[in-house]
Length: 287
Image 1 (tube, one colour):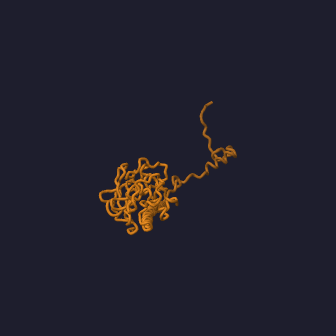
Image 2 (cartoon, helix red, strand yellow):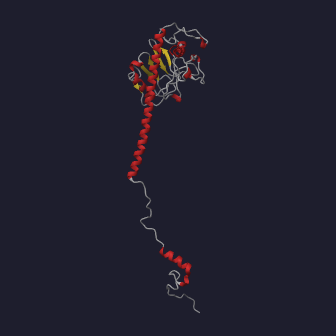
Image 3 (tube, rainbow, N blue to C red):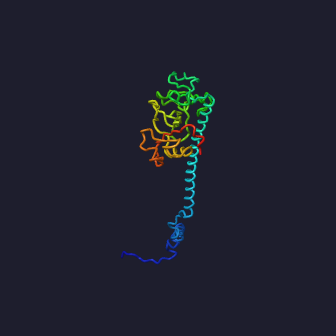
């Protein structure tokens, strides 16, 4: 018997693929599905929809508006803080003037007020129009509380503190000195002194050395140059080395200077400015 292949004619009756009888009912359904299943259109392959240029433009516009709003908001906050500093200085100048008119002496040099709180009565100056020593400076703000009802930021009266011998870091200085609500070194609020110069009294906006006493210089500078310049322009000429508002760098822990030649170092970002406001010119010069 010869072995080999036999060719058989395929017909619908005999071919399972063509749905013949021999394919069975089940196979016939499967074959029908195989032959009639729709194939994916070449136009649908890789046709994932992306953003159009119009949609991207709208998104970019929204992002720009959000960033612009944030920058404008920050600018408004900074402007409000600068105006707040100037307003406070004006209020303190008025309080000192009212005290002088009422008692005929400056606060701090009014020896008629109690000076026993610090446990030392020596060094208190005679009644005059100058703040002559640390004891005078320590009593300026308490005298204003007693004499013209000036309150500290807590709404209470100022109390004296012997800052020239050193102050513990745990002491809350706003109970003893005014403070400004403005961005400052280390995120803290720093005190302001009312002190004496060679010929004029002034507000010294610096920082008391909390560990080794004050000694006439701040431990570090509280303001960055752009903020110092903004305050200066509100009251004076906007130049750090002239006029009734001056600024300089007193601390040694900075690598930048408050000044760049005769002007403020507006490119500087460090807290490099200590400021002096000469008394008697603030309210008349506020812009």
